Length: 215
Image (cartoon, rainbow, N blue to C red):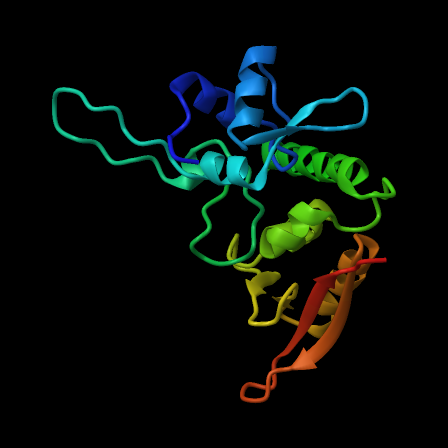
C-alpha cells in the first residue's frame, strides 16, 4: 500500500469491532478498503467485511497528528487508542479491573469465537483461527482472562504471564504455583490449545509451552 488511508477510511478502520475486525460503513467505503487490501468481503452470508492483516496493522498504529498551529502534542499511546488488548501479565500493565473490564473481555472472547466460525474452513469454533496464530500472546492471554484467570501485576497476588518464545506458534505461560499453572493448562486446552509443562534449567521454575491446535 503506497498511500495512507483517508481520514474517512481511517475512521471506519478505527471503528472496527475488537478482535474480529468486523467493519461498518457505506458500500463505497467498504469497497475502497477492499481495493486497497485493508479489508475483505466474507464469502458466507451475510457477506460482512473484515479487516485484513494489513488493516489490523493500520488500526493498531496511532494516526499521525494533523499539522496545525501551536506546540506539537504527543501521539496517544496504543493503550489509549480504544483498541482492545488482552492482559498478558506484568506490572507495567495499568488496565483497570471491574465489571466494565469483564464485559469488555467477554465481548472480545465471543467475537473471537465468531471469527473462528467464520474463518476456519470447517466453521469450527473449538479450534484457534488464523488471527490467533499471528497474535499468539494476545490470543492465549484472552483465553485465560476470559476464563477468569488473574494476570500478574494487577494486585499483590501473582497471576499468569504470557510471553513470546523463539519457537514458531508457541508461547510460554508462567504462574506462581503448580496449581495455578495446571488450571491455566486446562483452560487453554479447552480453548483449543495444546500444552506441555517444562522446567527452566537455570531457575527450575515450571512453565507451560502452549501452541494452537490444528485439529
